[in-house]
Image (tube, rainbow, N blue to C red; front, side, top):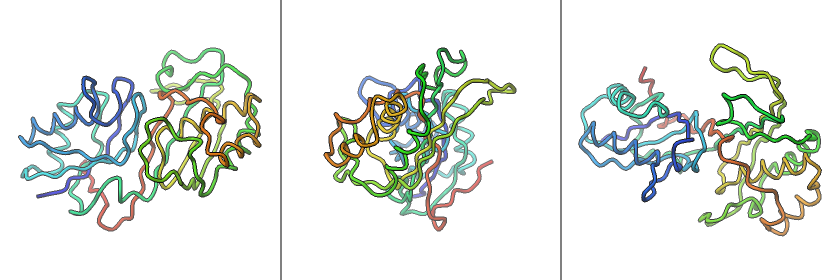
Amino acid sequence: MKNIKLLLEYDGANYHGWQRQKDHATLQEIIEDRLFRITGEDAALISASRTDAGVHAIGQVASFRTNSNLEPTTLQRALNATLPEDIRILNAGETAEAFHPRYDALGKSYFYIIANTNFSSAFLYRYAWRVPYTLDLDEMKKAGDSLLGRHDFSAFRGAGCGAKSTVREITSLSIEKISSIDFMTAKINGNFIKIKVEATAFLRHMVRNIVGTLVEIGRGEMTLISVSEAIKLKDRKKTGPTAPAHGLFLEKVSYHDAGCKIHDAG
């Protein structure tokens, strides 16, 4: 039996997240359905990140086991021919038998886009959170720096999180002001903020709760001291609101090269 590794991108707007749910369209369900049509097998697709409803990905990693004789390049082409246009298989390849997309991941990076304006482009409303308030980026950056390192992130954990440990390590957190975003062959000008977070692993809604807290700090509704107290008290009620899902992108999942390198499927 072969272990096939996939690199995917998707627009999450039309889906209720990655993981299968009763009576809702999810990414896992749709891709597994297409794999059944192609191979005749009930494939169990495992992802590196179980992204929430509305969250996008440009670097999701998943794998499945199969007895099919189809080459990975053929599987990639067949999947892209049958999947909805908002889900694409960027690469496919056979990987080590023991490879697990989630457990073998060394780290993940997400970024979040904020349109800091009274109105945003008609082409970006699905991909950026419009925040019409003046934001103090210097204070936001100070708060972001205070989250670096290994902490108990209970105060940033979403409801329903089943993680056994709430200790996580943020290895990088950057906040960047952007004056334009490339779209097709044009530049959309505006006042954008990109927040990028890298960590060894994340709790449910952790990035969105961090973003919501940083925005509250930027507005002057919260202070750096209050964030420190929230972490110390492990109290979700003392941090900011959960930022909307549509501004969040899973950017990359990192692995050791050995045994986990995907083969280019063209």
